[in-house]
Amino acid sequence: MASARSSRPCATILRPGLALGAVALVSCTAFEPHPLAPAGTSVGGTSAGWLVAGVPVPDRADGLRAYRDRERRHGTPRLAQIVQETAAWFAGRFDDAEVYVGDLSARSGGKVGGHHSHRSGRDVDLLFFTQSATGSVGRRARALKFGADGLAVGVNPPIRLDLERNWALVEHLLETYPQDVQWIFVSHGVKTVLLAYALAAGASLDTVERALSVLHQPSDSTPHDDHFHVRLYCAPDDLPYGCADIPPIWPWVRRTYDGMAHAPADDAALLDLALGPLSLEQVPDVGE
Image 1 (spheres, rainbow, N blue to C red):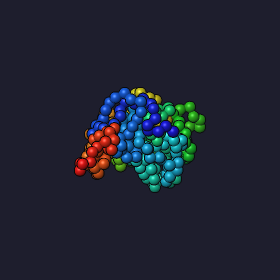
Image 2: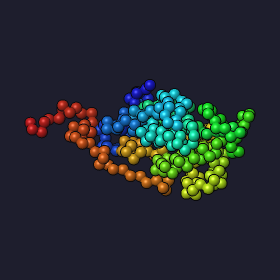
Image 3: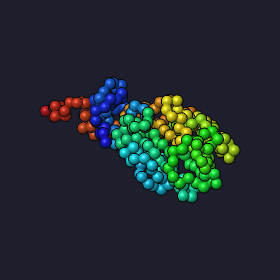
Image 4: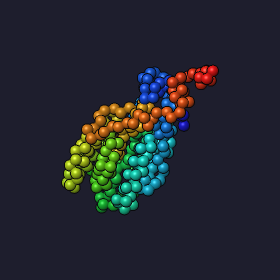
């Protein structure tokens, strides 16, 4: 797998000589993470960004089953946490429920085949929950396309969306992680049938109103009629290292950042940041 410093084009780079939190927009040939950026830091945007030593999502966990290669299943610590917590919650809510997890990002971010985004550890694909015409729950990872009637296109015998479980997933993400989830990409048709189900089931109107915004069919990729694509905002701790949120920032999202928590704690680190490429050996001892 390519390392975070391999030669490849990029648009956003953080240099050691820059003040912490500064971003230089330049043409460059290598991604160099900020020397203080911890593992799992998301840098740049989701379509032109990188990831510093991403956190892997396991093949199997409580309520979770991965259906894509592990090389494509790295994310920020927050995304990995949310995916695993949500899967475990599902297993407790529904008997024998499993969340099928697809692509996140490569360990060092950058382009992932088949995706325009998924480059900075803040995107994850989750398969729809399905059921047969008789109501039995789907047990296989199948990326079937669904229409606005909730039925899989061109499949016989028919398979339909499990509206209860799919809405439960959306509802859980929006109510449990409102400060994290920016988008849940999905087709217009699936969005329509999900919201109709939510209203009929007596879901919270506040949650439905948020879902009207967050559920969205993207205009620059496939319609997402065969899976959910969940995108998180930058974690507040990643913002000083160049993580970039593309609007909108929803009215209910409150961004906070404690700059002092990221200040270097020792003189050597401060000198290294201030001097950039200069060697510490070139600095005379203040006692000389």
